[in-house]
Length: 229
Ligand code: DX5
Ligand code: ZN
Image (cartoon, rainbow, N blue to C red; front, side, top):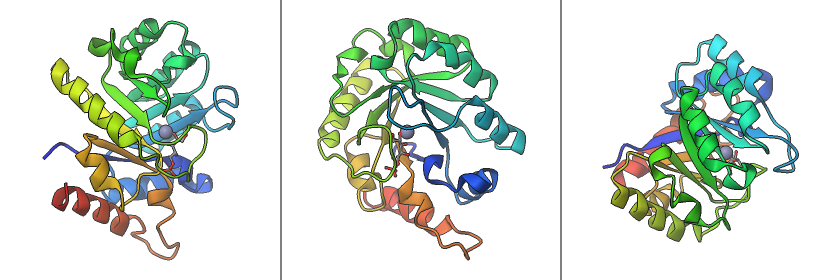
């Protein structure tokens, strides 16, 4: 079995009590905190920046923080996120004029680097940078909003990237983001993903009066990955 990692997207969390939400979802067994950064320019929505990442670290969050940049340009903000405690920093190739330089900057800043592919973005961007990426993230929705439906053609794209990674021999995580739920996570894993971002699929599943609110949904996802992949 692959080393599967579940990465709740805090975009779907209750921002009025973000520290508590992140503590709870990690205590329930999540592996990585997925942190969506939107600038109302590269995508038509506006979210959170390095201050919030730093606040989570100061709050005591120790898990890896996976910063998904949906901003343009990207280079100016990379060192700020590194200083704020980011573990991974991923960006969309269309948002950088110099992809190789941006990837190098992420690693030089002490973080793990990644490229993000929109549903219609060609995988050709990987051709000359496989030695410079630690994560490949396939969007299974168009970026900008949580709560959208998984685009089925992502499965074929995942199979292609899995092949590319395995042929390369590099240690690269394959992450999928958008519309990931208990119902489709097995199929997504079978197509080759090892890292699963889920926002509404996790945070909207809990009852407010349940103190262990994310236990059952995380357990369901983990059970499916263990038993049905
Ligand atoms: C979309 C974001 C996703 C989003 C996923 O642009 O990158 O991380 O939060 O949300 P769900 O899981 O609800 O589709
Ligand atoms: Zn994301």
